[in-house]
Image (tube, rainbow, N blue to C red; front, side):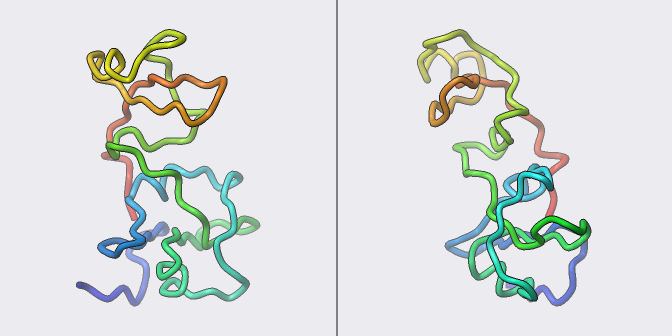
Length: 124
């Protein structure tokens, strides 16, 4: 397991541990939606040990923050506001899957069946 001593990019997430956050869980979080996961002066290692994301490139927002919720596929990890409807009200998970789309019914009044996004933009 490589040891991270300095960020290679502005966004770094824990990877390869039981609390791991996947790249999209960190890089797709818009800065103003970040929820603090640390304390003033927290180090990247301390943040990683909490299973959180770290990005110190933007001032005025938490640098150590909670990741977006995991999804069955990394392509389905996104903020609710980024969901583009791929179904219809009351669509079943099975019918959504047939359309090659993502399904998550944890939040009301947003699309539950939505188009996946490429993971090429996701990074640590």
